[in-house]
Amino acid sequence: MDLDLDSLDFAGALGFDRSATGVAPRRLPEWTRPQIVDPAFALMVAMPAGVRIRLRTDSPSISLGLMVTRLAMNGEAAPPAVVELLDGAGALLDEAAIEEGIVISVDRRTGAIEFLPGDEAGVTLRTGTESGSPRNLEVWLPHDAGVEVRRVSVAEGSQVEAASADTRRRWVHYGSSISHCLEADRPTGSWPVVTARLADLNLQHLGFAGQAQLDQFVARTIRDLPADVITLKLGINLVNADSMRERTFVPAVHGFLDTIREGHPTTPIVVISPIICPVAESRPGPTFVDDAGQFVVPTDRPSTMFEGALTLERIRELLETIVAVRQATDSNLRYVNGLELFGPDDVVSPGLPDGLHPDAAGYRLMGERAHRLLFAD
Image (cartoon, rainbow, N blue to C red; front, side, top):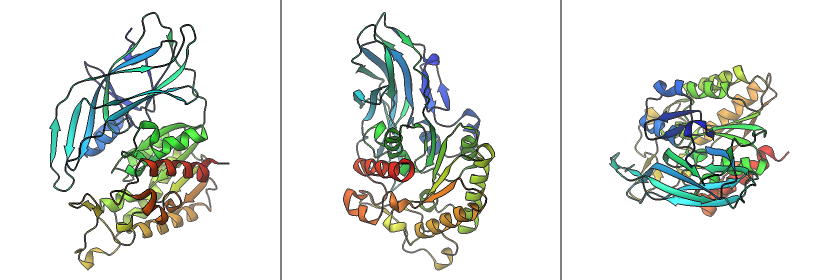
């Protein structure tokens, strides 16, 4: 029995791309679309990190038809896109790995991009539910691939209704690739999701790989969202792209916070600085990928280009100062040093395989540490 896609609850989605074949959730609202000028940002918005389909049913299975768009980086095979089924208590019931669909092959070293066509994937997830005993279920969509949902089906004659309202505290998190967690091995493996599950929070996931550039349309989005707590993990993408100097970074952070405070005058906000990235700690970006697949920074940068350039060490100092200055009139603002989430001792184990991003184990560790640092009390 096919369900009406327009009637489903896509928790974590703030907009949709709709076509004759299905619906694709987006993680920013429709009004932001014309302000997104980078195609890479548009793709990250279309990757449904933290987005889950919530429903209540007694069906023994849920079937989905998905057109998935996966990324293959630097000549490596695109990882499978994983779908997970959880019950209302957060227990994993079933999962599936998708290798069908479109593949976008990107060579970061040369900038070459190739689109490889593919087919729709059919996925069936077992719920373990007995007929006549409906329960709340969540289908977590892939965090690292674009997804068009073309079909959601349950067994004929099954009861289907809206899931019970999610009354947990609402956490809005904004960050970079190290929040998006493309290297995680499953949707619930990104560190914000690990933290949210440990702290029993309703997560709005606004981690955008490569795109945490303090865009004002993101600040306005956060301003307008319901939130019981807000966290902002800032800095690494500004070094990666060498997109700001100290002169523009400091007022941009203040402006980002000012905008959010328009809608959340007393909501707790935590500003989190970057985790360790050895090559960019004391040298400014931009970063690029070398032939060995490692992130590196230029070594031949003219000395005249260093004035006001941002390093991770300097960004941490600036963020701590910005928060300290604002705390004089904002007692609900806090600073956390990103090195407490993933620091120098972690470079060896669990490690930074590409010199910038943790792997799946590293993200789980970050999630556990974030739970203790941010929400243990």
